[in-house]
Length: 196
Image 1 (cartoon, rainbow, N blue to C red):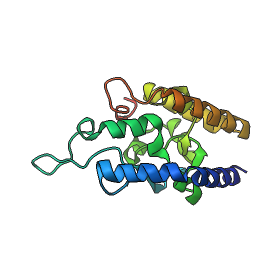
Image 2 (cartoon, rainbow, N blue to C red):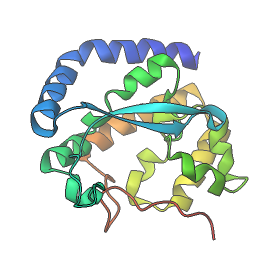
Image 3 (cartoon, helix red, strand yellow):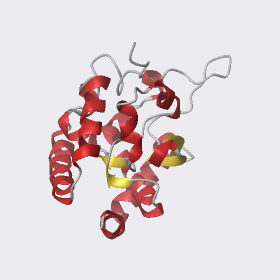
Image 4 (cartoon, helix red, strand yellow):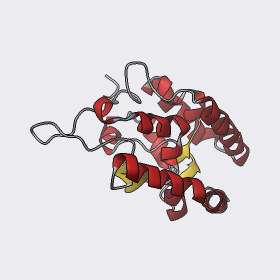
């Protein structure tokens, strides 16, 4: 039932949001150049790697040694706007159609975090990750890693269709209020370094 819901809703959203996606793509190309999409390997169901898609929000500026500049130097005002409005997340609807992720589930984090999870935290990998989830509607990037993982595991143990509908509604409210986008002192959130 969840997979059918994902396919129907993501297909509908891609259809009605196509003009918005097209406009964002044109603006990304004009302001940030190509490639239009940011593609990064993330852990999916049972930590199996897949490529997550987002619209680019940063430039490719490098230092004298050819290394990318820090995120805060490459994140433009346009990129901040995309993140604040969550428009950068729209390409993930393609990930949903492909079956990489679900609409609702724990956010797919970085591959290097997986070995750092405790046995309890690793439960978040037992279901497909999602575009949004229980942790996102309860603080997003403004809460600690410990709190995020507790929300993720709670969702895994209590998931239901009605809960997913509730999360979708709360997500829409969060997006319009632009809440929890950044952690204080960081462009998004600090890196997870384990539980010690």
